[in-house]
Length: 264
Image (tube, rainbow, N blue to C red):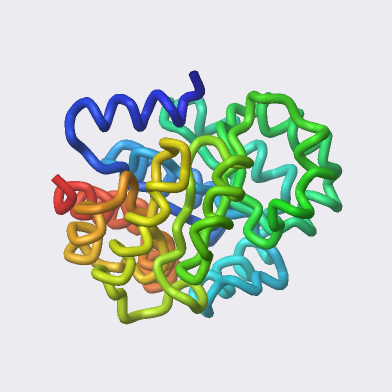
């Protein structure tokens, strides 16, 4: 059983919903980003998503686009992201998912990515722009030590949901709305309806809902029907607002704590 599976099993036994927290690795620099990771992991985040900064993050809104630019400017790349995972493993045992676009993985080398991710202590990966029909060239080179998380959109028909789920492991990431990360106007009723359809077509995999969740109130609503709540842009917005502040990591951790408490 993978660390991701163990986490969801444990949370399910206590009636809890997972808080999945996303940050861009290396924003605003390696040291501060690692301390932010430490604070988040100690304050209620159940699964950590580390975004690999990319120069053309087409699914991401302005907040995460700027975070990627800052991280790249500070020297973050795939190799240093792997080192961040390795160092994070010295202080946390929660699952770590590497969130990437396909181009950085292709440039790094698919087999090398898998080998280094597993060696560093990562538990899963999510490749946002790689549909199942085109992913065999990547996943056929991999073993079973890294969960491959798949995305489902609110417009995905049920039969395709089932096909996507059959190729997934760890959990399914349900995008709550059409659009980019950081979009506002979460429609929790509409998201709940799609989540219900997905759960009936996902072979028992946990369903985590992301996009548009920026407040504890949003997280509380989504936790009523999802197995996990994904928050990303709200964390990065907070980081951006506190660039240069010595207490920014602590404030990000405090926000993670508020989100988690709202979900209980």
